[in-house]
Image 1 (cartoon, rainbow, N blue to C red):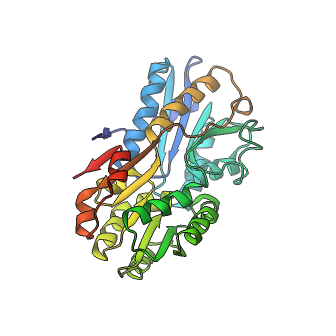
Image 2 (image 1 turned 90 degrees about the vertical axis):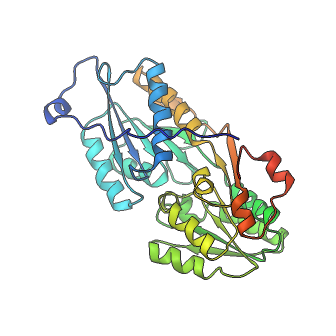
Length: 328
């Protein structure tokens, strides 16, 4: 068993306008834009991992560092507005959470250093020239590679072998590559597993409801792609999957803790902690173009046995042995 700490209360650091206008010479400013809502405990824990590592590296809030944190609630218009606001503060470095947030910052500045986290395809998105040589003012940390699309489906079939049609749900406005990044691997796996793939774009609460209602039936299954929109709506997705008795695989552990069946994805806390080291190096004079994009080092799997029983499924021993967290 393993519990992730929920560290709440790490809200937006809001400073007086006079303080924003001019900082002491020894003070450095870091701005952070999170895709999630501020009430998301998992996101707060991820961000705490980042701030704690910065402190370990010698950056102390109010002493030699001031941090501005904003929350976009998976709203792309809000991402644009907040990115413009934060760039206007003339920070020393930016921490950008997810692909659409990084894209919003890139539209605002080509000079201020940007470190991204939880971005799957930085080359395809045009953020970097290559992983080894980013080439401009942006570098960061990839969370999940494209092959994961097939692995999610394999995991779904391992725990729910009766599935014949599998939807993969995403928001085209916030998912990597507009949703296309994971689709080739997902569709290749579907052919090998004799499963009908069903790309399922959603952009609102109502569309999530309609999409999951359409999956009712003994032979239907769901993969919820790693996507800031899905993450913000995780309670709705998990609740509907339970109501319609849909076996589902998710990319983040928070879904399973909320009652979802099984998840497999990156360890976000590890990525946020590693990002602090790049922020530290940039604050000490390194250039983003000289810092190669890093791939994920740790993946985690969680399974909810109670949910499996409610769906009439038996969790295979192979999954139980691989899982980092088992919820009874």
